[in-house]
Length: 201
Image (cartoon, rainbow, N blue to C red):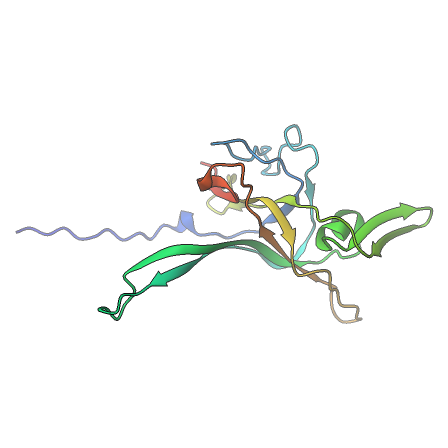
């Protein structure tokens, strides 16, 4: 019987390489739709009028999707015989290099705590209690093989859960970590409650 080799999948065009940009306040697409981008890869402000770029990062941005499985065993077998998804975790993380930008980052990085205000000669972030506010967050990066195409990881409803913590020093750039964790929009289809990862082609 003749055999056929499995083809190698060495596709350089599928490698991620290039700086991503993190945005907040982007629109949440409807069912079976995706975030609309401008030709430069940023969110189209016609459809996302409240979108804002969150600035430089220390070492780029990481996105992660992880499901936690619940395994079930039978006494007759050493290995699990079945599994189900117990939890799902979706996160966009990194460290921002512009912690003085209280207008853009202040309330976003301090959910339930920070309240931004400005006046003659100052910007401030009052620390106390405030209502939780969810935000639509995405990271967008060009495709290395074709900079007119883009990689998009979009969380429909997210909050930063690592707070605001910046260093002050003469020999270091101040950076504050972020980890925007996705929360389910329960009104959406069960296959599309938290976000989307797509590549334009």
